[in-house]
Length: 290
Image (cartoon, rainbow, N blue to C red; front, side, top):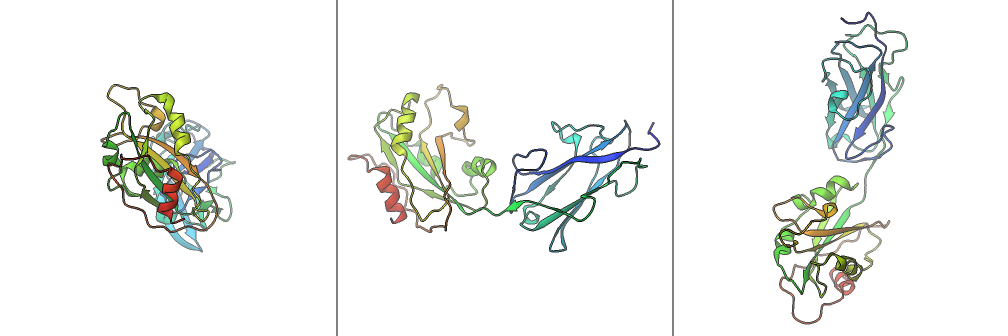
């Protein structure tokens, strides 16, 4: 049996693209879809199925509007972020997530609930809620295939062959990093004398690979890849990548402000094993035309 009146509020409302806090403090990336979660709370237990509506506008033009139906067969009496049934949800397309977008959320627009004093059914109460949307600069990823001389394995070339910003190999980076447009470059093969089957050599490899990228102050990512570990070896969970073949990678983000630098990627060279390896810094400088 439903109560005669319910106090209806939505104390938590946020848009989530990868991670978010209750206050919505994580800025949104322009052009990336976002999940809107509206946590509607009723003052008493009930069996009412009331909806909610979201409207996004930009320069007074409606860019997105959607009615969100109830998902639990009732209006919750508390906030539960652990399950999608604890909130009213709708995915907002990336085309609507742009700088200058404003939002209004309305509870019970169809008037199903007999509202008690203290209810708030419009957020914000007046005007609109400005969304904090940023348009990040182009992110450039350099993939550097690495061959270990003590145990050479060419499987790394299969992983980088034909890779592009939309490839499965880049899905992890696109998901967890605040990136918009992305460029991917495959660098020349780097050969190391270190035996990378020994995890203790990874720090030495990291230091050996490190080279400041001086390219007009752009923002870029250097991704160092090597051949897969032998079967049966424990894999480092922090660096596992999805895909048919898994390749060891380490990620380093170079956050530099300034204009974007255009350069023509050098073709991938396979089987470079003869002679001493050219220092990575010189290789990067060559590819960037520095």
